Amino acid sequence: MSLRVETFGLLTTLQDLGRRGFQHLGVGPTGAMDEVSHRLANLLVGNPAQAPTVEMTLTGPNLRFKTESLVALCGADLSPKIEDQPVPLWRPVLVKAGALLRFGRPAQGVRCYLAAEGGFQVPIVMGSASTNLSASFGGFQGRALKVGDQLETGPCPGNRYPTLRRGFQRGERPFLGTAWFAPWSRELDFARPATLRFIPGPQWPLLTDESRQSVLEATFKVAPNSNRMGLRMQGPKLSLEQPLEMISSAVATGTLQLPPDGSLILLMADRQTTGGYPRLGEVTSVDLPKAAQLRPGEALRFSPISLEAAQELLLRREAWFHDLEQILADQQTS
Image (cartoon, rainbow, N blue to C red; front, side):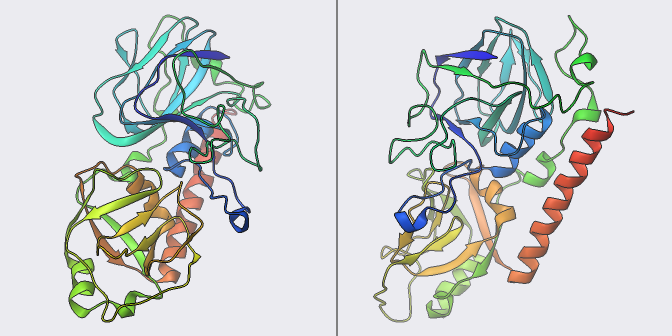
């Protein structure tokens, strides 16, 4: 399969599950901001979870398919259409050769993921195909997609779903029924204000009583200067009991930092590897996809959670993935 970029959208990059094991060299993980939507898009077309997807931000590109292609769109609703016909999210779609996939008004969320059967073929750098924009490597030539770029996919991954293509009826709406629907949109929960659960970090006790109360009770908004490196918060100014000088230490995706201006930063996929700001906590892994779908100006709240409870939530999510994989596999024998 191949497709050509006709317009590039606001920010369109190739991402996978990230580049692990190189933080000691100063190389961050990058990867899909909404890991769950990325994984689901791949699962619905039979790709491994690590296969690269196209991550689109708010304004999607126009993509011309050169060959017939099995794809899936998951995550934000950016009003996708093929030949003026709305394209559903969270299920496989068979796109005809020559068709134009375009995106319109962003109806819900921020980031949408396009997976194609066989996976997009780009060089693997340090074990990953993800685009590192700050260092200009990985993905498609180390940059965001632009007009004229052409993406190719690899061979189909072992015909994982042998009956899937046969289920499409030529000339009818190009998608299957509810049996192939991945209902993760309910879990993403686009209700606002969003609630992000966090595990209190090492500097949490050093906040003033008023600041701790503000984190737990106030409503924050995502600042306009947020990006893939981090979500900056607009809200009450926070402060420590006493000034603190810190030696830079390791940070993670989900770390809540408090810079000197008193405004929280939630570190995301393109974060740095170390930081010298106080670490107030870590947002749970299961809530990071929800954070990735927050638009500038949208409201959120924070809620504390224990490490054990956060781990249980992650185990439940992975069990849900396992169950869905089994359901899709069972469709092949029914």
